[in-house]
Length: 216
Image: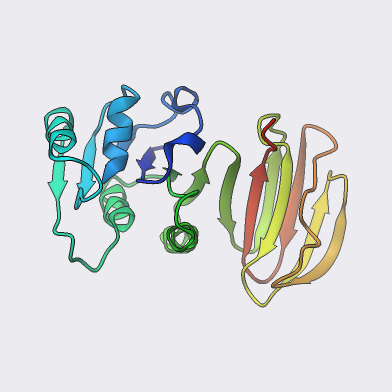
């Protein structure tokens, strides 16, 4: 099992504690300023990728010296820096990709990065977006086991297709059996597990599976 961590240029004040993920990630990729974020957190940079238009020349030189691989692109390009980082990640044949610092800034960037989860899933690779308050995964029809996570206790399901059919939730405070929910519905927001695990399943559509927590 190979896990790749990608760090983007999003706000660093909503990053989770990297120490919780360092032992899980096999390769770290910094996309643009994300490479400097890795440097600041004393994490080895396996790949630094991007146009590096959001950092100073001095910061870029520090990244160049620290990174095992440094790949600079022109600012005028078809792919975003995160997309370039994903292309590099695919070459590493990962089973899972963790994306950090890709939320919390510009809304267009956040939404685009969430949509990128679909392109990752199409390659049969698991992926999760992680920040201090949320973990976001895209799922396709099937049955899934959800483990209780005290750090992210709230669980929500958001349809991103016109409808999701056959949604069944077991082991949740608010259970469902073979329900159809529609795009725009808030019915499956803020659920919780009753015990240490539960399951959800559905037969048609695409769901965002979100674990979150309230900051105190």
